[in-house]
Each structure stands twice: as C-alpha cells, then as structure tokens.
Length: 326
Image (tube, rainbow, N blue to C red):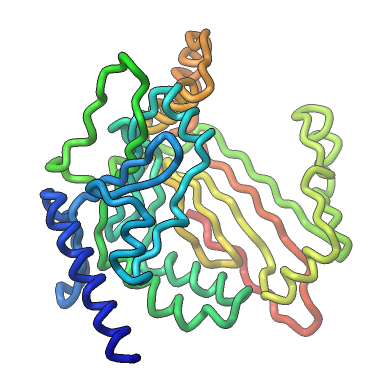
C-alpha cells in the first residue's frame, strides 16, 4: 500500500511538472537571502467556465483528480456561477496573483492593485498568532511560512468574455514584478491617533474624547463593542493590544508589538483599485469620484494615522509595550 501511494504521488508530481512546463512561460524572478534553496514556477492560467468549473490546459478539476488518483484535488476552486456571470458582465477578464519573496501582488485585467507585503519577521508573527489560536498547527506553520520567501508563483484566473467584447491582454510575463511604493521624504502633513481601551465586558472607551468623536466626527464607540467572550479569547491567547498604522503608503497591523504583513500601495494602484470598483458596480457618474481622488491621494500619501485597541490584562500577565513609533 505504501509503495502504491508513493507511486501515485510521484506520478502526480510528474503530471504537475508536465502541465507547468506546457505553460511555456519563464519562472518568476525572485531573490532570496541564501540561494541554497528556492522554487520558482512559470505562469499557470486557470480557465473558469460559465458554470464556475476551473481547468488547466483543458483538464478540469474532476479529470485532474482522476488522473492523479486523488493526489491533486482542486475541486475546492469551483466558483459560484453567479459570481462568474458578474465578472463577465463587468468585463473582468482575468485576475493575476504573483507571489515573490517580498509579498503577494495582484493584477486585475493587467492593472496593478495594492499588494500585500511581508518580510521574515512579519511571516513569523503570522505563525505565532495563528499558532496561539490553533496550537496543533504551530509546528506546520513554523516550517511552512519561511518557505514563502523562497517560492515564486504566478497564477491567473481567466473568466469568460461577453460576446463582442475586445480581449484584454494579460500582464507582460517578461516585465519584472516589483514594489513601486516609495517612502515619503517629507514630514507628514496630517496626523490622526485614536487610543481605545476595553473593559472586561468589551465596552470601549476613549477618555475625554468621546463627545468630540460623536458630535464632530460622527464616530460612535459602541460600533467597536466586543462581547465578553471575545475579550476572554483575546486574553487566553495573550493579545493585549492591536494597532493599525498608516505610514509611508502602507497599512501596518501590529498584534502586541509584532508586525504582520502589511498592505502597500502607490497612487496608480489606488486609482486602479477605484476603477475596478467602478467597473464591478457599474457606476455611471465617476467624474466627481475621480476629482475626489485627485484631492485625497496626495493627502493620503502625506498622512499618518494610528488606531490602537487595548484589551484588559489577564491576571498575573506582564504588560507588553506598544509597537515602536515609525
């Protein structure tokens, strides 16, 4: 039985290699601190039909499952046909996801969107955080997450086109994928900070500022209320505070004093994201929205903001300091 399972696995890997080789594109250009081990794969296009069934090079998920003796099961990738019809009607022809050593880059119809950026420390923080909730997964995460920085892949989800619609070319495979986010050299022109503390019942408070937040900014703290059970769960996993920080065209997320992967953008990525939103929701009058973007994007590039949610300490636990300022 063991030999049969190993043979099926080897045949499955051979089949996957043949499929990837048949894609005929260059592997992703990645760089790692040490060249002793890396895996870089060519672009794989997954065609989604009108019924939401994916296929690669004409092989659908059921056929892949059968050919590999159940070793390659991608049937979970099936999509809701209603969602596929929505994308087709909105002329969203393809979405590409490119993973490199420094993050996950996303392109809609070939246009770059804001991307998820990471480094060794932030990936380690993800493992610690998930491992705190699911201890049985911690060992796996410790081994797997560092591997993300040594692996490059490029997957394109290709959706059906509506009749009479021109084909939108995919992103040029020879164009190097790299971050275009530039740190601001000038001091920020806008700074916003909000520090919210919770009690054991999950009631949030901002001492001295609640009337201002409610009457001047329309912010109601009860919208941030948690259940007592949620507070207890946070205490059980050792989470004392969560901080969201906007700085240098990035949204940083800290759990205690550890940074998680962040969301990074540039002006064009923001515009592409808004354009995709307009496209998906068939917004007709976008002139005013684009005018607002002309004002908001420079402000966002020169703004700093921070929201900290602090939770009550469990008995006998030492205080973890807040994340250092940027």
